[in-house]
Length: 67
Image (cartoon, rainbow, N blue to C red; front, side):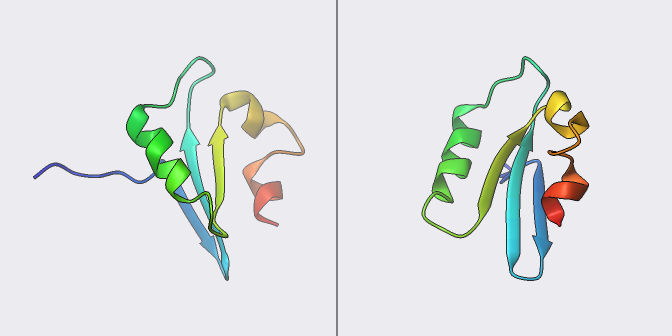
């Protein structure tokens, strides 16, 4: 049996849930990653694909996103 990875990050704070894929600047999502993110489309779960530039930007830092 193989392992299944939902996302790079699963963040939970109170009722807030975020799933995020971490990618390099040029990295692309696999079909499996796209399917997992799509599975959360009609839920209250926030979905993100974060790249290095996203996390360095002051308004998109993980700390700011979580507040």
